[in-house]
Amino acid sequence: MMNKKLSIVMAMGLFTSLSVTANCDFTDFPVMDEMTIQTVMDNANYNNRPMMVRNFIADVSYQAIVEHYHKIWDGRYDDTAFGIWHQVTTMTDDCMMTVQIAAQSSSPTAGRLVISNPPTAAANETLGEDILMPADSEVVSDLVTEDGPKKGRVTMIATAGSTSEIAQFYLSEMLNDGWQLDRQFVEADSRVLAFRDGLNTSNILIIPAGDITQVLINEEKIK
Image 1 (cartoon, rainbow, N blue to C red):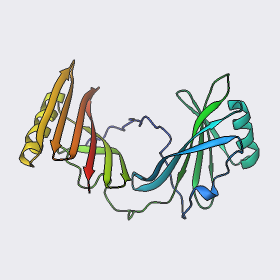
Image 2: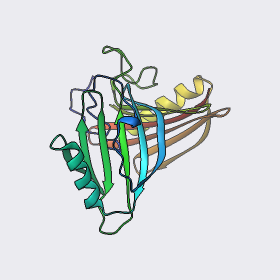
Image 3: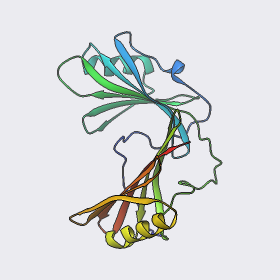
């Protein structure tokens, strides 16, 4: 197994270090009166931890939202930045709550509310269980979502070997497992493989990252 410390960060950026101890849901999340809320994910699981996400639009400045949550959480918060987002996070006895606010000068202001429940898996359960990957690989992140009959899964893996070697591994293993190759293409040193099995799809992006190779697997299956 690779001993290099991995620093791959998911695009959503705020779903790490969620060590909470009891159940919680959005009834616990303080919402501003000015916010119009829309559900993004209500039944997701990131790295063995359930989470829920809402989008919001608010007809106030982003500074007003930041100040509101500073006041609500009264010294029990942490401010961070991720891309265009200003993030305000608090941890209670029950859960972790994060407000992501688009740092912009005009209103209305867009953002996200994220809340995480405690882990659903046993402490010794392997992250990325049942994911197809080469030997000497590490699962960096694993996001599972359910939407009616559809089950989605996005998994990031770090592994040794060249992108061409990893692509050949997935091509061989997926075809042997009954998947059909829908399309494939190469761009510079990156590889993309798209597979289909009836209504089920699996898209695999393989990209070089220094002395390791990153693999992003995006699956959608019908239950």
